[in-house]
Picture 1 (tube, helix red, strand yellow):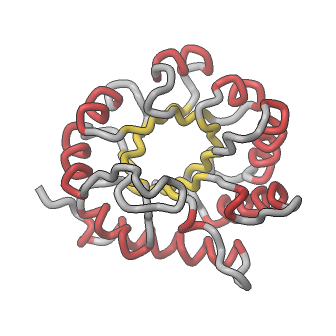
Picture 2 (cartoon, rainbow, N blue to C red):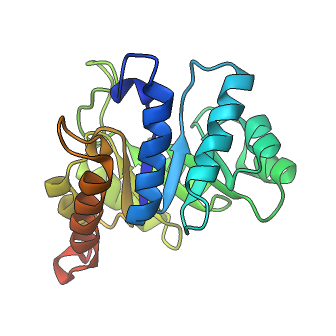
Length: 220
């Protein structure tokens, strides 16, 4: 399971940032990314709802699910596929009661105990941060691969996605630790001169290989 977490400011600091983000979502859907988590915390409700609606349209006719980061009201108003809850947010049960049983509800967890508790009710979990990342302050605590391995054991049956400094080489590491996939921002941002379509198709193919090969079987 591959999840693209959005940050339009990583694509552009100009007025075209939103348009470039929508283009990235369309390319991600075409490349077969499973989840798009719209995480634009600085946007007011109306602007966020408009962006989510554009992302849903960009991913239309694909299997990609568009989720809203923490804003249950925006997810409900736009018809998004679900919501991704922060670790300190409302309960998964409360979110599902507002969005309906068909909604996809995930949660961020940072410890083994949090993973064990959330696995009882969430559809998937995002665990981390595992490595240093540009989206977190330098002093932000990180978890270890052993922590990830333990979280996957206590939350067996629920997909856990690793997050934090994810790269293609690190995908094999988290796969061997038991993760069902990964989530990230920077790994999906195309480098200068490379189109979003080309970059995402290449990255997604490499990530699929990392999680679908025999070497990705977790070590117990």
